[in-house]
Length: 140
Image 1 (cartoon, rainbow, N blue to C red):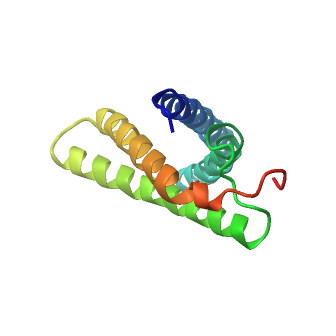
Image 2 (image 1 turned 90 degrees about the vertical axis):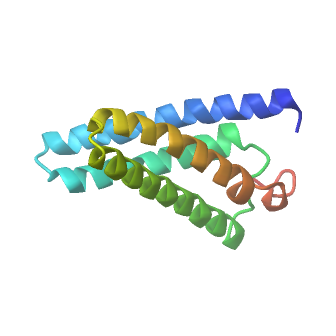
């Protein structure tokens, strides 16, 4: 991959992440307005954000690296969700550690967002959307 293509993919991933975060927060606030308990609303928003991120990543960021329909696609989607759970665990760990050290939770969350962004991008680039998993041309 050329440097320009790598930069384009990274920038596109940033836009996909912002869009997914928007979906996450919109769902979270909508569920909260319907008096859903905060943890359930947060989980629902996070799940909707994962779906939005899959849609954006598979169509705009990692084009040409999406597996064929069926078992290969289901496995790829499982890896995608797994990478999202790694991001969630990393976020929890960073916020917990930072707040234990007396760092404001909002600052800790910003640090965690950055770390999770880079971690999930690298996981998805290396393990989820690999060139080996790409469907043959014309099958997506």
